[in-house]
Image (cartoon, rainbow, N blue to C red; front, side, top):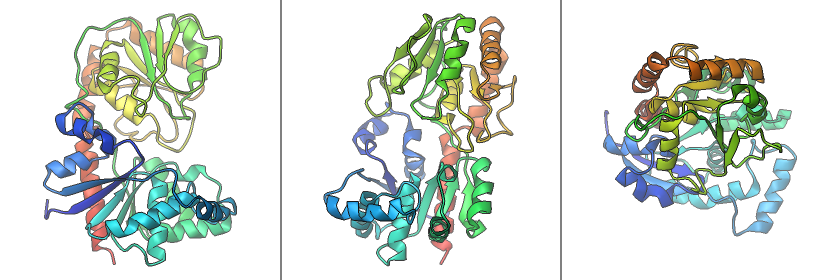
Length: 366
């Protein structure tokens, strides 16, 4: 580290209330996108949250006319712009600000364009390419991308973003996501159930349910997403998410440790998805079956039959075969390879280093 920075991290609601747990190690640090690791490295970090509502509802509704006319970047609602406008002065004292969701970054970049905000800005980008773009929206998005530095989880979104919007290339970079290996650790006794976790709408639970009967083993799904009824008799649904905390992080860790394998079924997409669950399970020494989507975040490191099982999208037969193979063969080598992958390439410290480098570049850019 060349110098200590003062960094402001901006989140959706729910992080600040969990800061005491972060400090005592009872919550995994990856949910703070590298902030804890940067603080441990000597940087000063403060945490802010962006509400999804605002007090000036009439003005927010008026600004939403721009969104409906495709004159704002994706997901930037009227209340997003107003909340960014109100928060911007509090962020002036920082060396750099890290927006952990894209629409917050775009809203602050819009404030910068209007002279309200001039702090170097880093934005974590995910899902930008899955939106509709009129010609004006594309031009606006490009202009705002040139007022921030963007960090992508994988190459799959990086190159197409350059091609579609043609921003200044040096403002875009990739930093592979990672998890907290101090929290997600092996332990406990293995049981015979298959586990799937996640609330991302890109989860392809229908394909998993189609495979359930032939898999045969008990399947536990932890999700808030609706699932088609009736469920196969070997499927149990546990309703929960990180936000409602129906299951604690320690409960989730226990499920990973006990599961025979974890399945992360995904709809095909350029957007990286499922990385948190996949890497958490690998860190707990549990083999994973993952859908090989176009958005696979680290294709060079996730190797089929070495440290993971990869299956084609929407292929229940391939999913069945991969799960049954893990249930009936010795997975000791795959478990060890998964753990080594986390140590070398799936650690949140590596992602934090990428965020720090992006902040340095943003500070150095006029």
